[in-house]
Length: 171
Image (tube, rainbow, N blue to C red; front, top):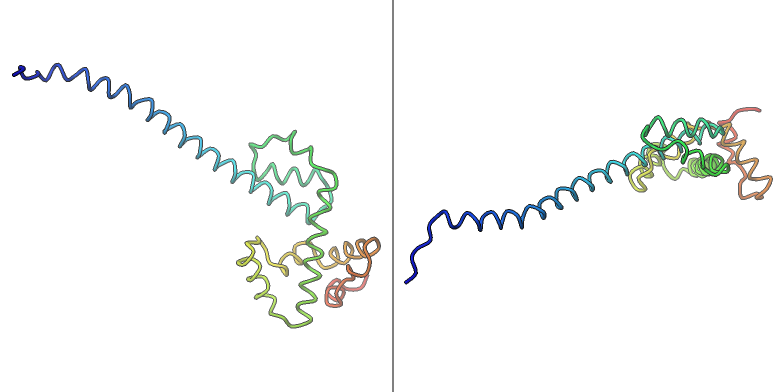
């Protein structure tokens, strides 16, 4: 029968086990930190995109759009943001004008109350604003101007709704 091991002789195996497990713990810790940084970056980019889109809906100035995005996420690279396609600031207002037009047609047809339309689009499609709120954001007059520009090139499909023309007032 072999003699029992002394507690001192097991100290070496504990050191070896620790040396084997330590790199694994280190890698897992680094992976968690990296995932947290990626999540933070995603939130920053989303905030910048939303702020830039909101600014683009109201103004046609690319500098204002880039400024709004940088204020929302100051750690973004301003040089990369300036490389935005010059047509991009025109896209969002055109889309919002069409949304405002459809909302005006829906109101005329009494499909739902303005509050219900806004709630449905915010909750159903995860929009930051509903169609009526988008109309208020850019203004009915601006929506009509954009729709008339689209109508000149795209035809009667872009005809402003009578309710939207009325909301825009004379002009």
